[in-house]
Length: 368
Image (cartoon, rainbow, N blue to C red; front, side, top):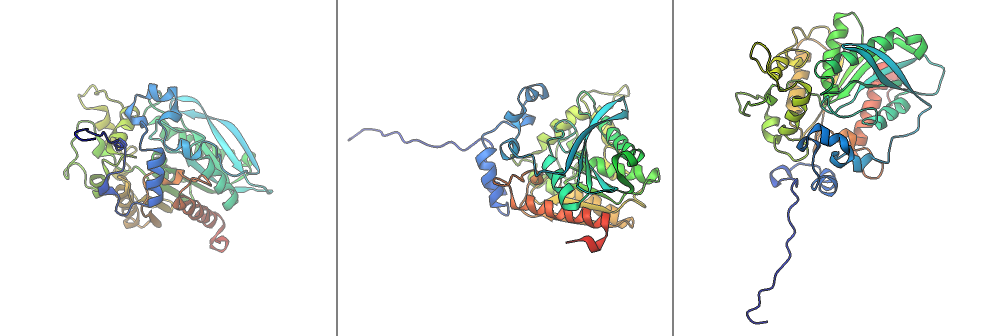
């Protein structure tokens, strides 16, 4: 074999492999899950929304972990059409009911997906767990999505769903004095806003639950470089380039939700929207007298610090606030609750939130 060059095969590093700088402290189960299902994929934000809609499963990392798991059985499930006002139309809500005579407490869920993606399947498993474990009705709201229905349609769809629920309490067999709201990511942002709406209209909520919420996305402004001057949140600087949820993904969502155009005053549509408090709850004119809040953050999430800072704003204004950060977890860790392929901390999150909802609706003596 003298003089012969022997070729050796090399295995290319997956395009979306987790970088070494992010491995320290990152949950090993998440690393394995991502490397198995996510590292070779094309993310939704790397294609147009039109391309994504041709085959959502191709671009959705949660798909291989939950495609065949809709969650546990519940006593009754029903879809109901709800009128909405801005603009006028209808949306679907899915009502999960536990067994028993009622009337039941109720929790309204606003799913995640950057106001662009997602629907009634997104958090179906979590809704079913809450119905069973907390013994409450859960109403999952299928609000209208951008780009067809841009900001602020989704916010007002969710608010219309809250008011419809209370106006139809007898038909729904729910207690209008025991209502809570919550959501993940975009849904967390809307929950923050709706708590202000509820206070201003004299509606007493038992809780607003904000799960990895987007409360201040001004650092995502199109054309604005990421710097200490444009972003005060260390988590954004630490995790802006993580493969599972980088800054570019946030900017992709805002492009469709807020638009790319310029107003007749020469201001970009994104800048104009991001300076309104119903887009950036951090800018709300008053934080006084809001419903009790619970904020969930994930350690390896660029939105971590804005969520926790929002909690401190609520607390400083005298509101009841609890917070929990899930160590080693990425942004949407709560979605990975498949019984065989899920994450331990996703199941912990289900237990935590079900106990919390049971407690706020039934009292501390019901906590188990």
